[in-house]
Image 1 (tube, rainbow, N blue to C red):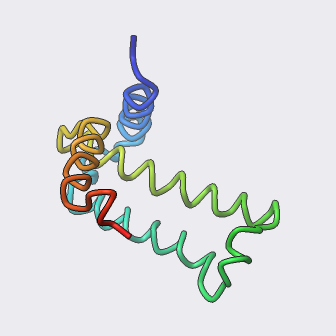
Image 2: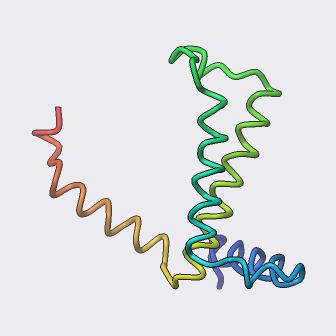
Length: 107
């Protein structure tokens, strides 16, 4: 059974292929697109107080959700091109961070 992340990756690969975009989906280009979309996400929170950032209007939340989706899409595409299992990478990074920042000493 395919994971939802694998299914999303397959869908994105097919989407790009159907439009002739795969040739442009190099690691460099995908990483650059990812950072642009991340910047567009951050822009929605620029100058907001912590309270304002937690209390987005429905319209603003919709815009933020779209930017989050763009970031996820480019990250999944980058992982696909490089052959990185994002779930395994995240789990390994959590283990690494737990060793680097042990809970009793993290405060």
